Image (cartoon, rainbow, N blue to C red; front, side, top):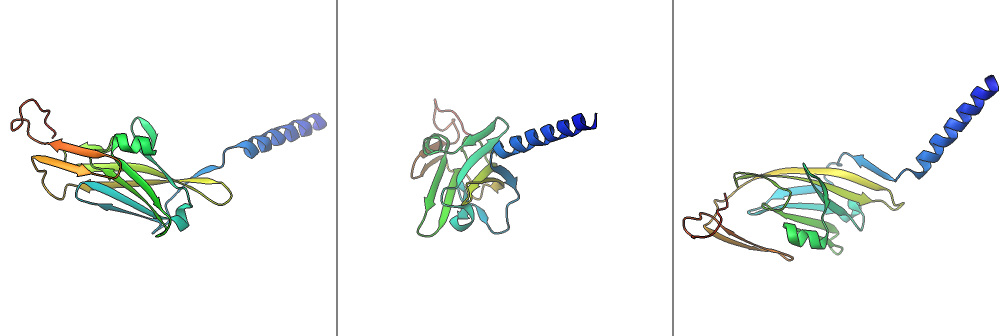
Length: 170
């Protein structure tokens, strides 16, 4: 009886060890102080991180009630995100339009952003950090606004009474 119990414990320990050895090398962590900076600009939110912290290939994901959305070049141009890695100054930059796809927009005046920053260390272990910010509109909207970014353009027209046939924003 004791031998059977020891065999079962060994078998269970072996299976748990095997499971843990093939478990993905991903973890979630709190963001170290000063590793990332966020700033609200006139019409977008800016996120910067140092490559010395984030590694050479950091990635961002937008997070909303529908899930997690990886920000690729293509998706960024469709959804109002501009992401670039700048090796010479040693940082990565994400710019998110106030009207980007997964921004919580409250009356075109308050914009809440939720992102994941995914870093990869030298041994290939990925770590996910939550980055959240709320921006308040610093300047009133003009009746017509054009914003040009490196990979997309936004054209906003406020007040459909001024422009018959157009959908009012806000």
